[in-house]
Length: 521
Image 1 (cartoon, helix red, strand yellow):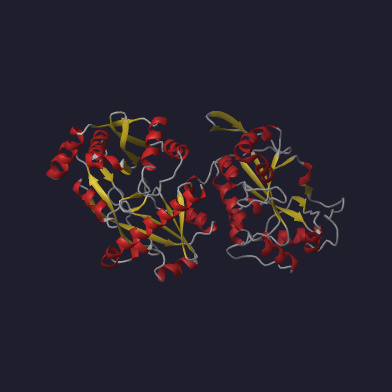
Image 2 (tube, rainbow, N blue to C red):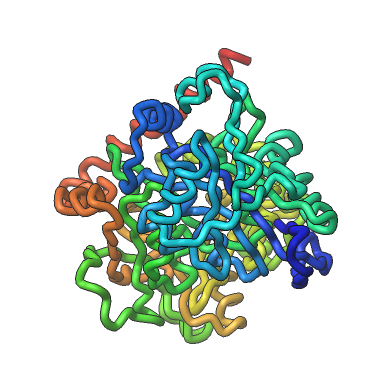
């Protein structure tokens, strides 16, 4: 995102987007902070009751997120924040509004002079600019205490400078009307035209069909080139407790910094969990607030291919040889539409695999292709019988580890030991690449699959999983034991006898869903 003001000189930087080098002018944002809370109803009630209280987790939450994004951006940027008497920044937000990138300004509601002095007194900042809050909605005018007036106009001798003098483009409205791609591509043109980008924190994540605004977070994120560390974060909800984790936690070292935990907190997360990759990068002195639990991965240490081949059992070696005799040919293959078509057929061969519902059953070929192509740092190994893709394995290459993401074969060819041939080829490929560690999921939740892993040299490698409480709710959840998934919290003596029941429930759900789909068709 970028824009230029009329009162400041050009500052340009170069970024690469859409594969082309692009000159960007200094980014200027006008941020109208109209309402104090993410909940519209709560904000209306606060304004109607003339409450000027500050503080609390939800108070100006989206404003804090935007301020943090601006601070993290490496681009030349200036953000002008326009606050009403009901949205005066609290201590948390003020700490984020660093003077070199942010300027506090006044959003006039009813009494310009009084509101100006109050804002300066409460923030300790010198106010230079103002904008005017307005609304044509009669109910809103009543709530804001304007008695039928759409807005209040300051006197001609009001000493602050009007921000309405500058050309402004509503980013939240443009995002609503034209979508992500078109809006992002238009930003450079607006900058060249000295346009200031206007946003409202209310519509950062939400959409307003009535006023045609939002959600513009994706555009702001891409334009500022920030928050990439959140791209791989997913959330699991237990009761009302949100537990966040980076689903790439096995690929890279994670040692969460305070600013990252603040991001999660502002986005409503209560706990952050991750594993310690002690096979390569142990964490020497974890803070005492990090709660430890035992976890594991299926791990194979690769010295070279012959060493692995001699270490596995005779039965496993014979199965690899059997696959070769039965015509299974394995090789590295490039990502292609032909490979996607083969994977699609494997996914949709059966709704149940290894006694459980298969989650990829029913996926379209387009979705399969999209997911395949988005994996940039990976190797696909195919097992062909004639011209037919009988099975495939995907290796994801991380830092100091390779990970088996998928190993699947056609059920009709299971008698040909396709998976054994694929796994042998995967070990050979990793050995040739000099990758020492190969991971194959976890061990302990699927007896038959666990046996396959162990027969191929994988061991149950213990690791530590940390849980970091981010909120008071998160701390309480950890004390009550609600932070772990049920399958991990249950002891093996209870979990293993329950697995057949869990598998039956999973299969029944899948079959019921499939039956309903056929009935509708």
